[in-house]
Amino acid sequence: MPLDAPPLPLWREYLELCKPRVVALICFTAVVGMLLAVPGMVPLNALLAGNLGIFLAASSAAVVNQVVDARIDAQMDRTRNRPLPNGSITSSQALVFAAVLGLLSMSLLVVWVNVLTAVLTFASLIGYAVIYTRYLKRATPQNIVIGGAAGAAPPVLGWTAVTGSVDPPALLLFLIIFVWTPPHFWALAIRRHEEYARVNIPMLPVTHGLAYTRLHVLLYSALLLAVSLLPFATRFAGWPYALAALLLGGRFIQWAVRLYRTQDSAVASATFRFSITYLMGLFAALLIDHYLAGYGVR
Ligand code: HEM
Ligand SMILES: CC(C)=CCC/C(C)=C/CC/C(C)=C/COP(=O)(O)OP(=O)(O)O
Image (cartoon, rainbow, N blue to C red):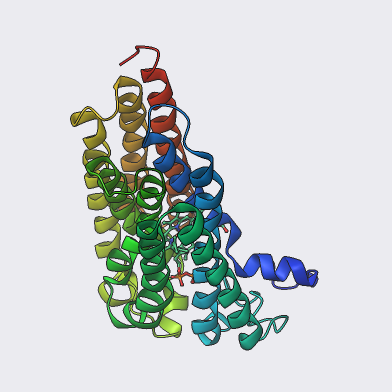
């Protein structure tokens, strides 16, 4: 949002506090985890209460993240117009909001879904809002590699909401997002490295330089292509998915190679944007493949 943007209505500020676009993609991966867990339609309690519970928990985590980060968000161009730094919501109002979202989430999951999903969702909330934001982010350039586990959990949460257990295919979906997170974030961090350096956050381009980070984006994007083929290799997904994984993964590597060879920050931005298209596309492909399989395409 431009720095001189007009003030938003209060409800919009609360919505922004939930990082709605990130949470939307998180919820999409949870829905896919849920739909892949059974051959036909998923039970209504998992579909409604499960997704709402995951959505509320991810939103609550995003709110706590901004309370913890209010001081540094105020010093970075990308984040200084967020609801806490711009003064439209106070930290205590945000904490009450996060607590309401978190409690609603846990109640829905415990009462209408199952305790395992509630426990794992709570662990993801704490993993992102407290362990990543409060500790890892400020401590090590591996922050987002380790912290990425919280963001990779949603397909597992969707799966357990339906099955009540953590099974191998769900762990493959976890692994895909886990390996996707570093190139997703580092592409952005390359463009924003000066801001992170200014607020003393040890992101990889700040501690190890841009060339090293570009190399790691490339290595992770290659690893991602390999990991994305595991659902096919284990016969959990069929040829339509494998084809999509190859095309999307090939394109990601192409962006990473371009990024490796240039200093142009526009390429870093484009790689970051493609990372989002990639994840959406790959999970959509899993879903299409899953339903096509019912018609004997595999
Ligand atoms: C530790 C893990 C992660 C880190 C550090 C991270 C970091 C970021 C950052 C800093 C942005 C903001 C970019 C901007 O303001 O221009 C962003 C945007 C985004 N992230 Fe991530 N991300 C992580 C995990 C995820 C996950 C798991 C998802 C979804 C499954 C996701 C989806 C998105 C989306 C959709 C956007 C675009 C938001 C927008 O357009 O406003 N991220 N990410
Ligand atoms: C189910 C559940 C509870 C999941 C929670 C996972 C979750 C909300 C992950 C979000 C990942 C993310 C946007 C990280 C960026 O934080 P940052 O502080 O590095 O980025 P910023 O500078 O944009 O705030």
